[in-house]
Length: 373
Image (cartoon, rainbow, N blue to C red):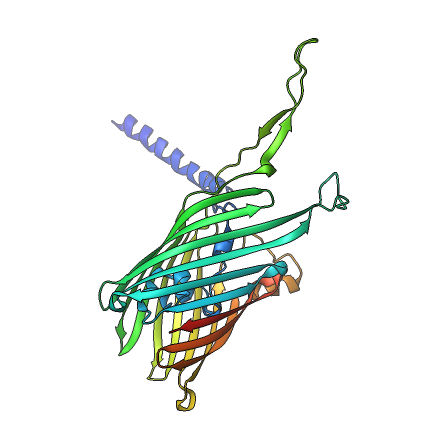
């Protein structure tokens, strides 16, 4: 018995002695499995409307107009009148993104149906290749990306609403094209805390099929195997490259909004948002919106908005770069803007502007127009 106990003790000590070395070996292994750069159709993340752009993803908790079709389908259930929103986003590298939506309440305002369309792209860019580095052939290519969606939402009680969007995504990159299908699902729980409104949101967006490509850009000719003399000539044969299916940029969001001030004609709301995309690490957003209606008792109202979005960069460490680049990286995610609206009875007309800073890529501008009746 003593010999058995001593042997077991020696075995345990040897195993424990190996733990530090094993743990040290594990610390040298990169355990980061984040799927950077593995999704397609990332124009789906560019937003809708200047109000949502100025408030970042945190807007999902208070989305209650047509742009809720994009940010949180449940938010359209709060609409009391039909509406239209159209907007254009002056994005980086002289590219442009445009979005438009229309929504109609029915069943006494407890349900809503809406439609949206988003497009992104550019045209006639020169093609540079190893065999033609100066584009002497004057060849060009264009990119056109589009999604179309239909939304249904419903108020299930005086405190809970839910909605779902079905999307069709089309992506054309030069002479290659692909398509996919996706859904968004959102909920909104609204109550009161200290006599002022508080709202929670839960949103999953762009959950769907993979996107694979086909088209003339994938057509190739390949040489045949060498054949014996006198056999069929080994002429090149036509073929087509096959691509893997790329995931869409699926994102999970949980949001919270609380009115610090809630009066008849003015409101100050603070917002927070936690998000987990499938192509990056977890991020967060916090922001605020101040709304003042009926200036001087008249039909005009104004709003001011601001937010900061933190989303880890694609594993790029800029600390070794110049201080200018580091500062730009630190400021990435800042956004702000405002709007003015006119209300008379059931008629509403508004215009909103947002500025969002993209770090080393520079600033971007979003302007949108709202119409309700």
